[in-house]
Image: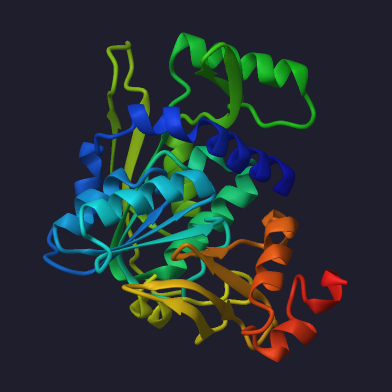
Length: 234
Length: 92
C-alpha cells in the first residue's frame, strides 16, 4: 500500500512544474471552510502548489499546508515568500495519512482533490479520522474528490478492474498526465456522490452539504464536494 | 519554518507532543534544523525552511543520511546514538 503512495509522491514530483502551470486558481468551495470565521488556523491537507494556502493566508488566516511532493511544496514555499506571507503560512513535506499535529488544533480543514489519491477504503477512512482528530470541535472541513460519472473515467475504472479483478476496488483507475511526449499515470479512486459522503460519515464527521462542482462542461459535474463538521469530540 | 509551528506539531507516528526543536541555521525563519520525538526517537529534518515529517517507509534514506552527515557536529548525541529510522550507525 505504501509503495503505491510513494509512487504518487514521485509522480507529482515529476509533473510538479507542468501541474503548477495549470493549477493557479483556487476552488470556489474552499471558502466554505472559513465561513463565519474571521481568524483561525487552517490545515490544507494535500496543498500541492499552495493555491488555497495563498488565498487563505492573504486573508489573515494561519495556514499549514502538507503535501507528499517535495517539489510542489518547494513551489508553494517560494510563492509564500514572494508574497511575504511567511508569518502566516507554513509548509510541511508529509503524508496526510499520518498528520504531524496534536489533537484539536485546526479551526478548518481543506482536502481539495486529495482523498481520491489514497488507495483502499480502509486507508481513506483512517485518513479522514486523523483529519477529524486534528479539528477543533465544530470546525468545518471541505473535501472534494473526482466523480466517476463521465464516460472516459468510467471506462478507465472498468479497464483497471478488468486487469486487476481481485486486487482492486471498483472506481480505482489510472489517469494520464501528458508531460511533453511522455505520459505519466496517476492513481485515482473515482467516487459516486453517495460513496464519498459515506466514507466521510464513517470517519465520524457530519456531512452538512454536498454538491457537484464543475470545471468543464460535461454532462455531470466532475468534482464532488462535501462540507462536513466535527460534532462530537471523540 | 517559524517557531509557532512547534505549538501544534506532534510526531506523525506516535502523536507525541511537545517535540524537541534543535536549530542549526536561523535567519528570518528556521532554515536548517531537526525536530525530535523523545517518545519514539524519530527525528525529522528541516531543510530549506521546510520540515520533512514522513513515515519511515516514505523517507528518502540517502537524503536523510546526507543530512545527518552534514550536521553531525551540531546534532544532539541522542539522535546520533538511537535516532530512528536512521542514526550514526548507518553512516558507517
